[in-house]
Length: 284
Length: 148
Image (cartoon, rainbow over all chains, first blue to last red; front, side, top):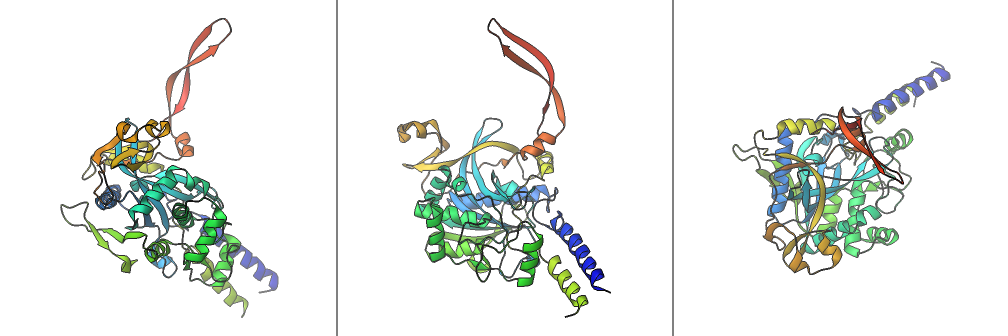
């Protein structure tokens, strides 16, 4: 095989691989697939059971996370793929009826342009629709922080803090890129420090927040940054670290700002459709 | 390292690239079928009712009362305690159980999905204003209908 053939082979290989990576199948669990991973009734019941659980704890605002991929596909130590803020709300239905439930304030990766993101409010059944596993991570902050989070969202601070430049591996210590978890962290810190000054928020994040290291090889990171629109390491210095649900849970726990951290799974008990298996921080 | 090894290594690496942390946060625009499926599921088994939401307002706690944010009361700065919209019918303090609807609430599909759904014919009145009179015309026009 001469040099030209080798180069041609590599170019062809990367082109095919890249195309596969950007297809829906490559992002398995990323909710681009039109069909749910579970039966609709299962999803609806699980979503409602998570709502009921949070409501039973009096949570007016809490951090919520889902799993969009098989655990074996995730880097070591990372257990959730999407994080957002759920707020107890008065929800006006199409009928005009007003009911109480949780609205979830998300930053989602744009399905048409993976290097961009959009803010979107949805509801628990939407949130868990494409989940790979029916499992929720929740952090219920202290009442004082809950009030601040609600005020922050009510004042539109989540919109002010939105940076549409998306990177899967965004560093939470600067504002070059943002992903769903970093946005959640930014809103939390905006609520805590009562500011939308990004420089101040990032300074405080650097001082107090421990990001989670992404255990993956530099070669993979290089290939990802080269071939995928939503991966870059330009915003990182040294080891790649990002905000995750677990690191946010640890952050709030470290500063006594959380009341409960839990993992919720359906318990599948007969005649108790809304029963959940609840495990604590150690299982995160 | 020879070329074969490089190719094999590159293959293994790039094929495992989706294993990054945040994948799984792509927006739901590809889930138009969700609304159809949920509509069919409506009333089946444990699901009592499915409904789309128009808007959600955070519920604030003021003086022990639950208030929907953004109400006229709040914007007018009137006495919250006297004019509150007590959406859940209960006085709430933190850590007390909250009322949750049994209805499964879902967001509508993304605008581009709604715009692509099958169409129905509907009369639409077009009102044109002239200096002398107002002309009202009726014509058949095409509008979109969201899936539910």
